[in-house]
Image (cartoon, rainbow, N blue to C red; front, side, top):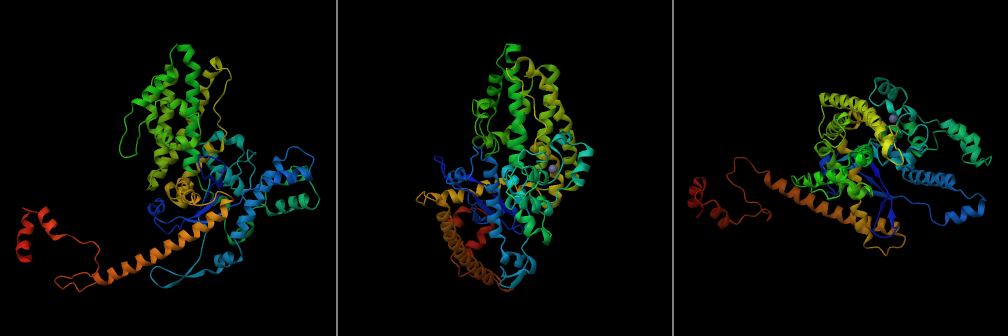
Length: 499
Ligand SMILES: [Zn+2]
């Protein structure tokens, strides 16, 4: 399972890295979700376009807008980097397997397979080589954007199956010839006609003939698509509505909302933390600061919003918030059965019905807001909610491949960055990662050897009365132990015999 995500390495400055992480699906998901377990393997730091490219392009072309060319170069760069990773050695292992000495000390022939690739939407666009904000923005299917509002309809579910995305190798080859041999512009007539929704894809070119489908491997992403996507936009739209109806009712409803959030006490260890006193303002800022707030908002939003809207809309908003919380709870379950998946499917259909309700509520903004803004139902993030049941059936529960694991793994390169000289950090980060992995392997070998010694020691005949371990680990101070259990009838006889 792969993860990749660009990240800022320091709080100040523009230093960034683009690591690719590898997890083994055979390992427990609970082990993978622990950032200190060593289950995450950084395998590469993807390069970014150098700043000097702008000077280079400006000398070649008289055009002032290079965005198309830069987007094309960025896409080519990431796929060229993946071409290096998916080299002949990897393809040979993919076809014929690779002999590996496993934990049991025996040699096994292992066939590596790419199970999932988790990334946020901009990276999915690069990996699937689809057009950002194009007609078909979903990396898994070819449903047009104009039909995304039909989330939850039976026709939508059928179309998801019938319109699965495929790679059209001939179209890509013809467009590449037009660009590179005939000098046609990237957004010229011929490439546009051929490449309306596709481009050269390394995964499809190298692993496609071996049966791998990159489009299917790009899984859904609960963190970015729902918690920071759909729910955040619904929450912001509700705030917009409250701002719009404030002057009508003569009350500061947003201040009431903030006060209600602030009144919610903390619960459990990190389950619900204390809300800030200005939740409404916090949501206007960058998403990364408020991920925690957003995640727990979903469960707390219903009582907080109750009674703030006019009576004719209040019940609708309450039902919408309930549907969102219901869908989120079911999608985030760590164990699923056929029955729970049916419930999730039903929750998705009900949520699709209420998507139209919030669009209808947006008529309220037109009367009071300076710039009327309606809720956008034609986004990829809303469309992706319909793919969760299928993805859970294929790849397991969402916590196994959520991008949250990749976000947690960023701690490692950020820690390495502290030891670099802050200039061209990618190479230094890679060197430190290699050193860290080697040390970790030596430690693991020591642990394995110690564990094996313990295993041999404990394998004593069951008829033997007692056995003294040579290992000094797990020692108990007898005086302390007996003192602690003073008065316990189970220990009285043992004490007498021992002393
Ligand atoms: Zn789709």
